[in-house]
Length: 325
Image (cartoon, rainbow, N blue to C red; front, side, top):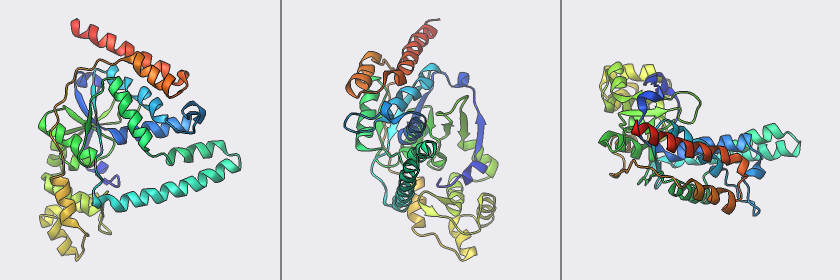
């Protein structure tokens, strides 16, 4: 969702990696990459990931730092990239652009006055997935044999569809939209230390005494990435209102309120553009070729990625041993 209201309603529990071994996870690639990208920028000297031509490819460090977590716990990531942006999201994208532009101005001011810490923090906020970052990320995934799926539209919707149809075991995202798009289970905190969280759709609906349509109605009343919510309605009030009145339309009528494009937004959550995808869970990364691509071709500081590549190599050996014992 556009806000975190659904966090208060969703059934979420911490799950041990041991319970997930052997699972295939459809990962919202933009969401996953952006989190590593901003972390890399925040804590790494930009000389380590900026080419002689001034092109920033912090994503290459982020990918190498982030993938070992999957491999070391015998998880197969399937990276799902966003497709065409829906018109419904245009307002949100414009708002993000404005925030980024404001952060860029503040970053320049911080750098000018010599505040390196503040400049680095703001630099992380201004990161975006450039064409170069998109292309080099896909190329690195190919060398590491990580499956990639191109979504027709929203990556979260495609992840949810793949989980719902059984082509993967779980969706993987920090956002809550996978719940609204119908993912039976979503793994969260895949970019954090410690065990992940598991968000369960069936348990959420049972706890709230709603069906999926009702959950979408609740989300829309609170506000999503695609619509503003109704003033004065928070998550608990929204649940009560949908239970009492039956659906979004009845709640809006009772409150003499409206949501622009409500029918289109609701339909988008319940029947989003998605495609079927066959996934081969067998991964055989070419670590040496991937390292040469990152270090030799793109000039990334070897000290920033060598440990990550070593972890990938070690995890593949260990996983192979485990499967033979």
